[in-house]
Length: 617
Image 1: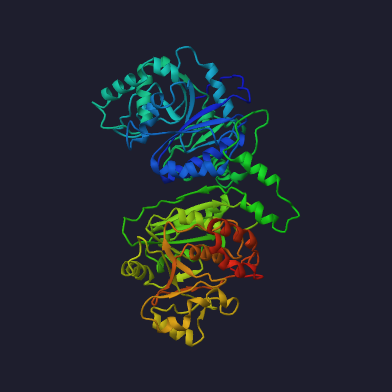
Image 2 (image 1 turned 90 degrees about the horizontal axis):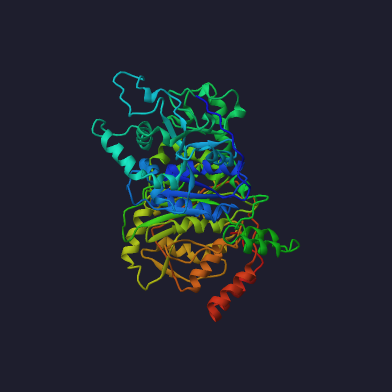
């Protein structure tokens, strides 16, 4: 089953081209682990050619832009699928026609492979091709194409055991010259006269062509595609773990596949799954390459920071580009509705337990940004899959922002979640708040009744309350909430610590209110509000938990948003352990300077509030 080929490695400055077909949400997650394993071992710059659908492209564009990997980030081409819409299993067949005409050679990879060696060693095998060989493949490591796996098993024709297409070396210019497109189409049409369909997508057609034209293929050493399929014979391929180059999880069972060395393979995969992708932002020695977009300016800004500055940590965090994986889990966008509202919030690993309760209280769409390490992102994935409540919800968009730095970038996270909301309005909440069960429907009705939209700019205030008890009976109505308030079981939010944060809401008036009423901005006001999706973004300078929401309300007020308190709306904050950097806040003076620059004399109104010594939220 083994083939031995030896070739010298390409020089460190040689650019290696890699094509990957990636469609859908799950595939966009798989490709990250593949790319991590490639980057870990590589010594050459890489140019990725990603054949994607619109969903995967929007996710991966943001991911690679924010990953900022040297000798990779500028070298990504997005290949639109114009040939076989939806049939991504056949896309590898058309790569000679869709990749750039000047590109001579490319390595093609499935998203479910993991590297255990430098990809340059694989690229070096192009040198072993004869003048007639155009495709490099590893032999299939099962009896599938021999047709003896079960009774009446009729596979497509293949040369011997056939070949697996999880790892391919394509000599593109030779393929084009040989008339590859016409060749595979003729073969496929002929076979489909007797076969109902392909069983293994492009692999069946590649094998049928090679059966007819065996001189096209260069067999590759089996260690470059160790296949962990259900009927694998891969154990014949290697003597010890050090022999392995690429592991291919080509069974539907993936990590659960039975294999003599399955534990070793699983550990290799899980290592890269949880590996901190930020560590791969390292420079390649002896490899001059264009830096990622914005990297030079970023380095200059970081170099200019004064470590003696009391705000050094904050400024450093502001300049940190956070790697973001949008729509980390399957998500079905809500149908367009003119008054619909998305709940927007952010959280870290220690708040995951709030998600189930939040889903029970808010039946509408949500956009949540999670600040996690790579390893925590996998724990989060398993947490959702194991929860009947969370796994049943397809209208909750989870966006993973990977942890980097010692401070909590609360406003950057809020902006990520806000930017991904798709409804006309957003409820800007926090993860520790449970909205009233009726709030989602009530907000939509209120937006319609108030005639919002058009020229009228309004921020609808949802009065905030808190319980100091972990267990309490959640109020089903305003009347029940007032009874709990009177009994001392609930309090207005931060009543004991920072009453001015919600004082302008005027809770005494709210008790009796039958209709929305307008309130005026006051220093340190930080209500939870419903606003149009295109509202001002949060100021990312505020990290940790100091003045981050209050600054946003200032921005709304200076842009002349009406602050309207809703008489039947409420949300209740549940107790939790104090956040570690609860007292960290800074840069209020700079914030006011920016306000003055953008809004002129209108910003003077906020100067006294910004000169006050501190506020906790």
